[in-house]
Image 1 (cartoon, chains in turn green, cyan):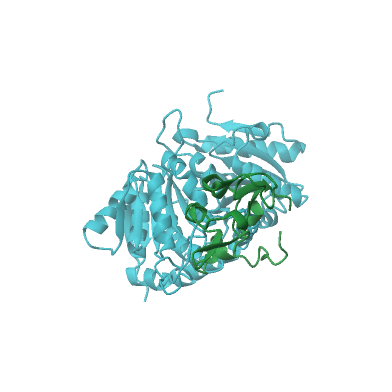
Image 2 (tube, rainbow over the protein chains, first blue to last red; image 1 turned 135 degrees about the vertical axis):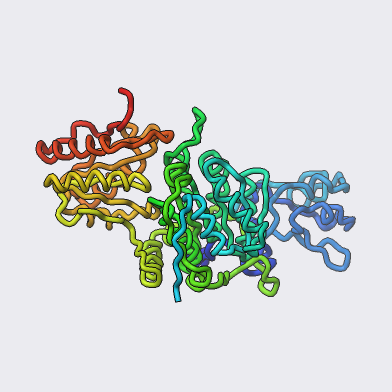
Length: 108
Length: 397
């Protein structure tokens, strides 16, 4: 747990949240047991993973796949499941042939 | 100027009159015997235009407390009323209301929990909710139910507390009994209460606030500790409000109501209407020279452990009366006894204690039952031994 979390004297009574949109500042990436990894050399930027990600954890700029937001990705694996691109060449992270997005065990 | 009017009222009607004077923004309630007289009377006040209250008729007590939670989070002054199985059906929401720190005030006309089905008085309903995080105020009479209901609003809404309060009176015994009740004038009540100004509210669109959000293992514990601390500091607020009420209206309220405690070697600790019977018995016993006193407990949550120890410091033997059983607890004792034992134990008290379960399902508590407890106390002082830790009064043995 991060050291900067408020003490029991500092938390808001009743658990109310007074800052709108504060979910973005809450790091749900720590919940991840499996980590999606991406191979940019094979990606067609179809963005089907971006459409399906339930946590808006795929960062897209100018219509192109840029990165995973690992602070908010919970490792559900939907992106790897829906990725339609399959290649025979080994994935640049996992070394396994197959999809552009693959899941590995989260080690941290 | 305070203008009082004496009226012959049932205890439940006294609570409804207090609600009329409080004029809550929202009341969401479901009728259940013996609380029906509270909501039925109050709904008549709504129909007659005597209050500005939005009265929400709901399909259950689960829905009643849920609606109260929403209305309170929206910033309203909110009340409800219930009893027995209705209170049990609110179980989930009782915790939510307290944990969200919503100052809801609830009138409870105490009734035995089923089964077997019974509509008469005991304290099993609210005692089952004793760990839900509410403040529990017990009333001996319709007058006290009226006074406690008005004070409960001030206590609940105190900015350092923000905790719901339930105000109890005994079903049928005082709830349906007509007594003289001295009512204050509407204006004085409203001045005493002031306007509720919530620090946060769902309707404050300039400061959007989320209520009831998801809380993980990294925050939940801190919120619970903070909630516990607020209840721990509640006694001062309860006493301050009781004192101010006394100064303004002449009826003073504290943690206990004491009778004959100044020189008492023996004492009886009791909740609500049974205090009347016990006081009569103790009065007679004192005339015979017995050094016995009465401690009527008004505030059960937060439990006044230190104050109870202080009140009992010269008492050699104490009888604790319980109108409910904590099933499976030490020798099947009652909750007031268990709390008392814990309080006295940590203070290294020398007072001997015995528990008396009485009046379950509305069984009458008669003077001879209290006399039996007093005779036991005399024996305990004489021998220094408690022969029976938990006894039953008025039970066919």
